[in-house]
Amino acid sequence: VGQCSNYLMEEKGLSSPCPYPDGHERLPQAHWLAELLANECFSICSESCEAVVTEAIAQIKASRHDKVRKKSALRNHGSKSSLSRADLLRLQSNALHAVTIAYELLVRRHALDERFQTGEIRGRVAALFLAPVFSNTIKATPWLAKMESTHKIRSLWLLTFLHTLQEAPEALTREKLRSYCTSYKGYPRLHRFVRALRLCSSSCQGFISKDSSGEAEGLSGTWVVQETYNTICALLIVVVDECAG
Image (cartoon, rainbow, N blue to C red; front, top):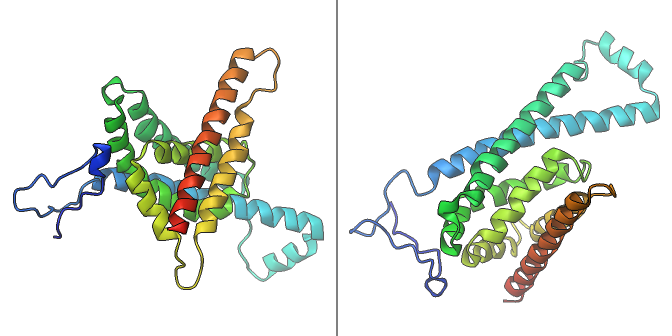
């Protein structure tokens, strides 16, 4: 057990002193259940989507290079066949169900609950999910980039990512970004975060309705895109500030 860490800045009115008189944390650590649920949701979604994306790329390459004869040869050598349509549908269903749980139950319901509408409480709720949402999104960036920008799974995932970063205390966000400003084992990591922001930008543009009859939906989509760009710009300012510091 280590000393309790006050990771929320006092000048923001979000200080979080240790609730125990001896100044030591107890196990399990704070936020353990929220992080466990979020990590499981994103892990299931990531592994399922990665399998589907890999299979889709393999099928595209096969169609381009006429793999019919090679597939027959592989079958004759006892190699495993590609995923069936039923397998792909099952993986897609698992991925959509997992990311929907993360978005609807863990994030959206808290955001709409009238008990959690003050700025301080919204920040504390977002802090519960910041670590798993941030780390899992950075890891998932390569396969998220291979999905259609308007794909529902990608859109829900990135909406969760943006909302959490928007509402989380700035001190926590800066701490996360600061750790990515340095290379890990000689490999720079900050570019993945910037790439994730680019994916958010392209995905949220799809929220603008192109149907002239859906005027209300189009206005709503425009508002979402505007909020997205505001959040992205604010995050980029923080990134530049932390890298310069």
